[in-house]
Amino acid sequence: MLLSACSQPAGGTSDTGSAGAGDETTTVRVATSVSNSFPFIVVQAGESLGTWEDTGLDVQVVEGTTPTIGQIMAGGQADIALAGANSEGANIQSGVDMTIVASNLSYWDQRIIARPGITSVDELKGGNFGVTGAGSPGEYSIVKMAEELGWSESDYTLTSLGNLQALTAALSAGSIDAFAWSSQAAFQMEESGEGTIVAPGADYVGANVLQAFAVMDSFAEANPETVQTFFEAYFATVKKIQDDPQLFIDTLVNEWEVDPAVAQRLAEESLPELSSDGVITPDELDGIKDSVAFTIGTSVDDVDDVKYTYWKDLK
Image (cartoon, rainbow, N blue to C red; front, side, top):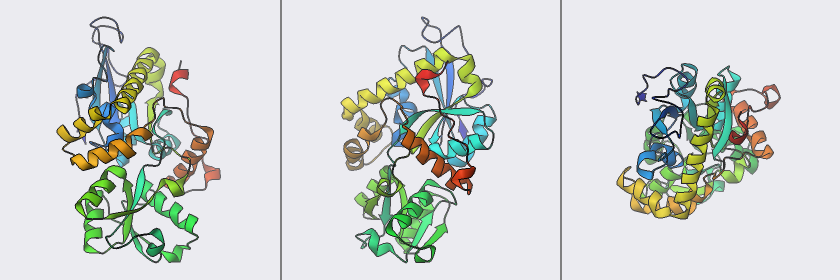
């Protein structure tokens, strides 16, 4: 885990005062679960996109992973989490004192990626599906697909492989038939000829939230104006790049070295799905609750309602 300028104590710090007051700045630490991932671009490339200009905020990115987000937040190393809503909800269930406050990407932006030669999900019945681990979003997509298609547990196999690199290697070697992953990786695999997209995961998952923001309760209570300023600036920049997708494409290509064809496809198919206001609907909250139950391996009836307060309503 790479921590960027995280010597500050928990709860953020003010160099000379509150956010937005002249030259005074307030530090906000945001933990992200995936590096250089397009849904996180407004935060991870905030300097080049001008996300925080004239806000009085010094936003510092804490690079984590899905398994470490809970540890980072509970350990006081970040104030805001940007990660899978299911993992945030699971961490809240386990006692991390934070609240989901906004959607980053409600659309379940995963694709079912099959080895070349397979052209439909029907051909995958009886196949071996790779997943990073039990309870992962990719496994959730596969299980939901199997349920929708009426497959029994004996109609497919799940193999835990740990990470994207292992999944792509296994697909190329023919040891797995398919896996589910985000559009960014899926588009790249189609461009390189390593895989074929046979279906969107969203067709099977339904209403849910793939990526969300959660704020530590102590930080929100102590810094309500800072939280408001952060999200106002964030969503204003989302709208800016949706209105001018070339800004998005240039950042992907020039800073993250994404294939131009992949960047163009992301701009056309995935960028419009980014939430521009953070609202999470009741149906989406139900979907998060279901995915949290899946993540922690329990019945949805044993999971508390999703701890959610819309960011504009934080006081």
